[in-house]
Amino acid sequence: MLRELVSNEIFTILLVFSLLLIAIARMAYPKRFHDFSYILVNYKYSNAYNKHSEFINGFESILFGNLIVQLTLSVVVFYNLWADLDLTASDLYLKIGLGLGAFMLVKTILERVVSKILNITSIVYDYLFLKLNFKNFIGLLLVPINAILIFSVHPQPNYLYIIAILLFIVHIIGLSYFFKTHLNTIKNNLFYFILYLCALEISPYVVLYKLITTT
Image 1 (cartoon, rainbow, N blue to C red):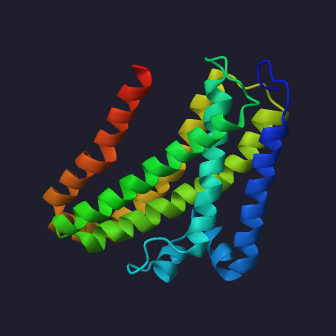
Image 2 (image 1 turned 90 degrees about the horizontal axis):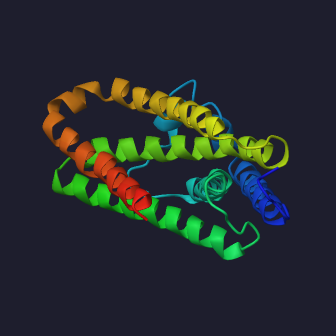
């Protein structure tokens, strides 16, 4: 149970909503969902479904919705360890969810714009596609993790670090696939790719961290 938790109603609703989104994704795109479920162990999904012409399609949109819901739950669960949150206030979850979604979408749009300016759209679009899908996969992993933290195990700060490390490993696996596949292209555009990473993969999170720690 969460600290001083009066009701699990909102958590239950959001978890059921996530399960509904996952079920819709699986029923609407059965083959794609099957291939997606093996994204950690092979590169088949990226090779089969990477479409540069699409910003985000229906399947990815559904799983992205689940990702936002699960990230919102994770933020609330762990932030409640240090702050006295009103866990029954629905606007709390709405503000966090909208903030996370807006941050990720604006960041992605900026990444696509910068890639056009630097003339590295091909490599960046592949990178964004793989990164989005590994984040969506992390969203699936967060469903049982959040359920356990909410209904079974009392959250502790150490759990946050353990979960963060596990999810970071998943993210690194995705990046390793990308760098292995595009190593020659990266070498030919090394300066621009490093510039892109510094500008849009590192600095936004540094700024976000500063804003959070100073408020």
